[in-house]
Each structure stands twice: as structure tokens, then as C-alpha cells.
Amino acid sequence: MAKLKLSEVISSKPVVIFDLFHTLTSLESTGRVEVSADNALQNGSQFSETWSTGPTTSQLLGVSNDAWIEQLHEKSRQRLAGAWKDPYVFIEKMAHAIDPDISSEVIRVAVENRINRFASAMRDIPGQSADVLKTLKGRGRKLGLISNADVTEVAAWDQSPIAHLFDSTVFSCVAGFVKPERQIYDVCLAELGVSSNDCVYVGDGGSDELKGARSLGMTTVMITGEVERLWPDKLDVRKKDADYVIRELSELL
Image (cartoon, rainbow, N blue to C red):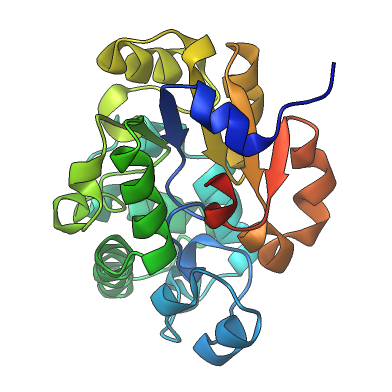
């Protein structure tokens, strides 16, 4: 039997669940490399309008970006699961794990900068993201959102122009679980009132999210636009868990 086109799959499934960062919006402080606004525009990224040239958290802390990324993604599940709620406390804990001599003032500035960066990413949603979500909603699809995020990263979510479009919004710091743990998907499914087989999951594949979604029976779609630019070495690994691969969100329609 021939494989269905992605548009046919989307039409046949009542629910589409999205990742947030590097799928619907982005900013360089969550990535591994520094990219200027000009470079983002030249690369044609749908996220170029949200990218800033200001200092990243690692730069303000005076630590290597790789060391900071390791703290974010490998050594702070408590942050993502909401066990650590005070950003000044957990950023200090993570910073001091790299360099115990970083001052409290430097940490304060880094925390405030981080909050402001994520607030901008929440408010300045790329037009393509908003258009795709509205089109799917207009076609009668239920929309879900599942994101690994700490309290600083989603503090401004209620200011986002797309927040009202989702029928279920699950942030790890509220749910107490992180992708790819089954429970975080189950929370979303319960709120939507559907089974996993009714869902298409769309994400960049970070945190093994596609593997987690597929293991439950969801159809998985990897969006590669940001991965190609930020982590090209991750493309092949992440594609293994994708039923479909697209570069831009508009390919869902």
C-alpha cells in the first residue's frame, strides 16, 4: 500500500500536537551557536524575526556555551519538571556547577536577560507559525502543545498571540514530567479527550520527543528548518523517529 501524503494524514487525524521551541518559535540562547539577525534572514529561517543579537546567558555568565547547554539539557531535570521554581536559585545552582566564583550580581543580570529573551520569543511568534495554527484550527483540528520548559521560559506565555489557539497546553514545569516520558503525553491526551492514534505530533526532535510520541502510536513529523542551521549533525539521528520530514510548517497544509 502506498504511503499517504502528509496532507492526507493531517486531514484524517482530528488532533495535531506541537512542540514549541525550534518548532513554533525560537531564540539563539536556547541553541548551541550564536547567529546574527542578518544571517538568519539570509538563511531564510521562518524564525528570523524572533532572533536577537544580544548576549546569551552563557556569555553573561562568562562560561562556555557547551558547558551551559550541558547544564540545561542534561543536568537540570528538576528545572524542567518544576521542582526548581525560583529562577535566581536554579540559575545560580547551574552556573556554580560550572564556575563557583560567579557573583550573585552577574547571575541576577543573566536571569533577567534570560526572562526577557524568552518573553520576546513568546510575544514575537513568526507569522508562518500563527497562520498554520489558525488554518488547522479553521479546518476543525484540535491543537495541543507539549514543551519541555522551566518557569522562566514560559513566564510570558499568556502574552503570546498563539496561546488561545491550543485546546491543551502542557509545559513540563507544570506537569512534573519531561519529554520523552510517557506521562507528559498522557496529560495532553487526557485534556484533549483523544487517543494517541488520533494525533499527529510535530517537533524538531529534541529531547527524543518524536521517539516518545511514536512509541504511543502518534504519527510523527520532524521539522528540520532550525536543526539544519543549528545542529546539522543531529539531523539523521532525529529523522529515524519521524514518519514524515518537513522543512517548514507550511508543508503541513
